[in-house]
Length: 442
Image (cartoon, rainbow, N blue to C red; front, side):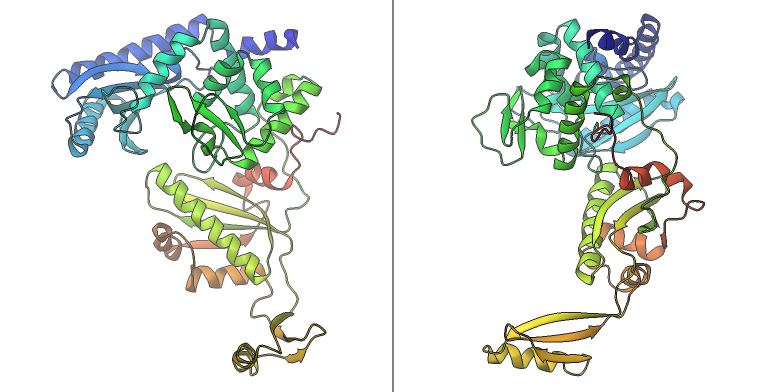
């Protein structure tokens, strides 16, 4: 294990050259921001945050977060307006653009490194006014309590989670955030201890200290806010996947757990994958993610209620299009289906049920339990035809924010190897057994 970890560290820890390049870019960015921020009395300080400031970034993933600390008296409108002004003016040479999370921030790219200009308030710990206010305290805490060796272990854990596709707290990912990896190393002291602890998690286990009760499968307490559960953003699916991968890694340590997975397109199980593609107008990733999540749930419910059981689903968001993939148990249903109604002893319900169905049923009878049953003919036997009608005429449960996008243009088709090549990785995640979690050579 120690020999393997030393090999991985050579990949996960940035070289001196990379660090010097990153420092050069960071200094260019912060000098530009500070110069413009000086014009505004509302801003008290400009400083680095995030993984760059903590020294936990890994090669290829080293964004630079620059925080502008506003006076508490500044209102939300001014907070947003000044942030955009400074961000766009400071980084105008680098084609800046606005991004949105809980509030707007400005992003640009300098020499292939993403720069995030993020506003926050100059608050005391616990008196949070904006979603970003904790970040400065996170940085100070980790700089105080993470040794250099622990910072490198954070990098190992990040690479492990990224390679196994359970990293990232975005709504559509629901994995482990960068800060969560730091909190895990803070609690368990090393990469190996963290992997061992994740492999043996118990239901409702609490990592950290709190007096508050949470209902999530596990709880990871933010060390600067004992009322905040960081694990609430991690899906049970990703949590379970992580536990299995940690167990498999400990059973048979290998470099493969730190490499991105790439495989040929699977030729099995894809016949019952249906793809819904639609165009969307740009909005913040968090907003879009929430809308997609609600829409996927609505489509799953509607298909399942009609008879097309959804086994799994996956999502891919491109620059202009959303692709929703559903693995169905079957793509075609029987022409007829039976339905059980009320018991004959419930006269009112029986009369109502009979009147509603007598003219459209192919057969009606009393079954052996004393319930009225009917045999009905399905309007649609093919999942594609069902969805085409649903997306055109109903959209029940679909997020209001996506209804117009879907109505404007959508395409429904069964997965086609030639047509859907760009969805290869998403398809494989949907229909191929994850060998990291379920190794065949263990």
